Length: 329
Image (cartoon, rainbow, N blue to C red; front, side):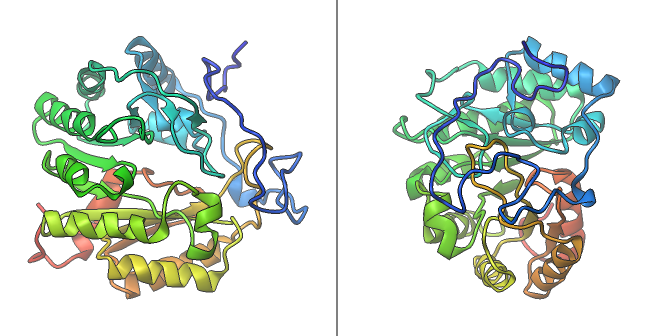
């Protein structure tokens, strides 16, 4: 039976066997691999409130999925109370398996051709002016789902004229034609997450590639000059501060405009254990360093996630970037 705070109410998740990506699975997801308890700056209030309840009912009524729920985001209560949500398209089952991710890995269901329309209906009902679309990897589809991505972007823009649409897709195995299909639908922001440093990438994101993820971001800039791009790094999975700085420089060199950085939280004991709790001061130092490298806006903090207040992130980056720069409207 689902509890009032169950982020997986329909019990869709398939927990996989532990993978040897760190010091082994912990028995307490509030303890890191060094035996240190979760610090006070990571405490969050349980999701509640009338708007939260309203939006949860809306999602269930339209048979939609949000990454807020599927990935057990710690900010779900805060964001939903402010009427911000990130929609998960192409179903809730991913064809890839990352050591940190709480989205279910399993054989996907057939493509739901009506999903873009239902998302657009929800966006209009919620009165959103900025929406984030993310999605599971669909390596079972010839185009990785690019056609559905483009359809969803256009549906949201048709439903709410002037809305800003941010997309966070997979890498489409580096397929330039598929990436172009998504970009041609004219999202406001094209995001693709690097997530971790080169040394850990192969173990933590085995179906992705560090250089390929960087190339996806470069391709977006080449296909649409001035396209606003965004990426994310997760800290606390075994990287060093020096490796984080090097990864930020790689993202800056790829022309990334917005970077988010947050603390890894172990979803279950079957996932990668937390290596360390990263202090807020370290996040602040990384943010300052990233912006000094030329990244227009770095949102960094223990509870920051890629889509956390995404519209606000975009506006801050817009204000920080020269007004003559292409792509900012």
